[in-house]
Image: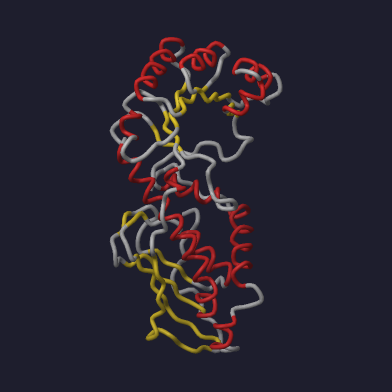
Amino acid sequence: MSPRAVLPPLIVLDPLLHSWLLEDVGRGDRSSQGLLGNKVRVGQAEWTAKEAGVITGLPIASRIFQLLNDRVSFVAVVAEGEQCQRGQLVARVDGSLEALLLGERVALNLAMRLSGIATLTRKYVEQIADLPAQLVDTRKTTPGLRILEKYATQVGGAMNHRMGLDDAVMIKDNHIAVAGGIGKAIACIRSQMPYPLTIEVETETLDQVKEALQHGADIIMLDNMPLEMMRQAVQIIRHSNDRIKIEASGNITLETIRAVAETGVDYISSSAPITRSTWLDLSMNIDVSTMEERSTLPEVSAKPNELYP
C-alpha cells in the first residue's frame, strides 16, 4: 500500500460509520431478529473476492463490526492495498452472528466501493510509474464519502488534491469571469486569503498562462489543452520560474495519461479513478459448521485489525 494512504482518525470515522449503520439498520434487522431472537449464537464468516482487484477498506470493515460488538474479530488474510485474484480469501470474521449479519452490507458496500476506486487508480498510476508526473484526485466525489474515496485513491498510488475549498485557492474559469480577468482575481483573493495558502490558476490558453505568471500564481493548471500547446506552456513556465508547479487536467484517460505526463507537467489531476470506477465484487459467507449457541459471547479469539497498527 502507498505510504501516503492514511485513514482518518476515529473521531472523524466513527460518526460516519454510525450514520451509515443507522441508515441500514433502521428500527432493527427484522430478518436476523426473527431467526435469532434472544439466543446468543456465534460463528465464522469468510470474505472472498469474486474478481481481481486492489483490496481496500478492510480496517474500515473491521471497525464497523467492532462498533456493533466489540468481541467480534476481523482478521485480514490479505494486506490493505494488495492485489488479489478472483476466488481469493480476503478476510475472516468471528463472533456474534447478530453483529455479523447486521454489519454485513455496510461493511461490504464500503469495501467494494473503495476497492473499485483503488483498482482503477492503480491502473492510471502504472501508466506513468516511470515518469516524474504524479496522479492526483479531484473534488468530484460522492457526498458523504469524500474522505474515504480520497483514501482509496491514495491506496491506489495517487496523491490527494484539495480535500475541500478551504485547503487552497483555486481560481477557475468562473472565478476569472466574475473577477474580469486572472490578474484581478489573484489580486483580490491574495489580499484576503490567510497564510500559508497557495494560489492555483486554471488556464486554457498560452496568454492566460503568461497572465498567471505575471501575477505570481503558485501553481498553474493547464486545462484541456492540446498536447503541443501544453508542451509550449510547460516551456514558458519553466523558463520564467522553475519553482512554479504545473498541473494538467481535463479528459485524462488511461489512453492519454502517458502522453500528458511526457509533456513535463508535475501533476495530472483526474476525476476518472473515482467517477469511472466500478465496485469490486466481494462476498461474505457464513460457515454453518462453525455456528454455536452460547450462554454468553466468547472473548475475541484473535486480535482484530488495527486502524493504526
